[in-house]
Length: 214
Image (tube, rainbow, N blue to C red; front, side):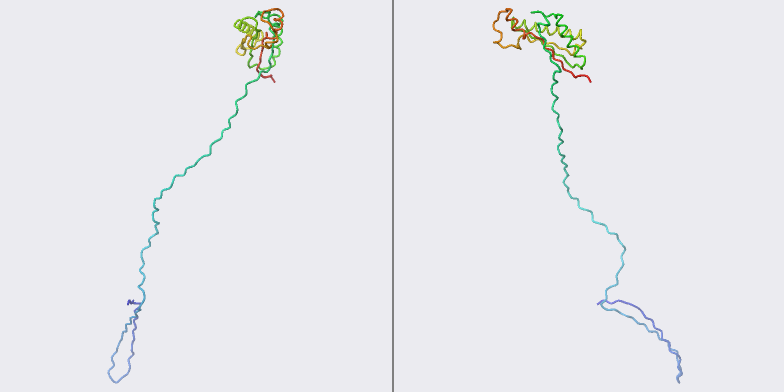
C-alpha cells in the first residue's frame, strides 16, 4: 500500500502560568502532526516537453504517368487541277500554208495577228502549238512537216507578237490525230478530190493558258 506525505502541521501550545501550591514550572509543548493518505497515486512527475515528430514515410513505388496525346489530324488539300486552256484556236493549214508547205502566207499572218490582239488582254502562262497533217504521204514525212508548221507559228508569236519564247512550245503529231474517219474520204492517191476531202485534217491548234487581266 502506498502512502504519501501531504502536510506537516506544527502546533505550538503555550500554557499560562497557573497559581498552584507547588512550585510552578513553565512548560512548553510542541506537537507534531503527520497526515498520511492511503491508496492515492504517486504524484505526477513533470517531464521536459518534446515536440511531436511524424515518422518518416515509407518509400512507395509509384507507376509513371503516361500521357497519350490524341493523333493530330491534318487536312490534306487535294492537288490543284491542271489549268485549262483559256482559248483554243484551230487554224486551217490551207489558210496558213500552201499545200505541202511550211512557210506562212499573208492570209495566215493576218489570222495570227487577230489572235495576238486577243492575247493583249490576258496574262499568258503558256502557249502550245500543235501541227497536224492528212494521211497522204509517209508518216515520218508528215510528222516532220507538222512540226515545221508548228514551229513557224511559234516563231511568229515570239518574234512578231512579243510573247516570251519560254512560254511557247511547238509539237508535230503528223497524221496520227485525223478529224475525218477512214470511210469519209476514200482512196489513197493524192487526187484533187481527195486532197479537198482531207482538208480538215490539215490544221494547226493553238492552246493558250492564262488569266484575263483585271
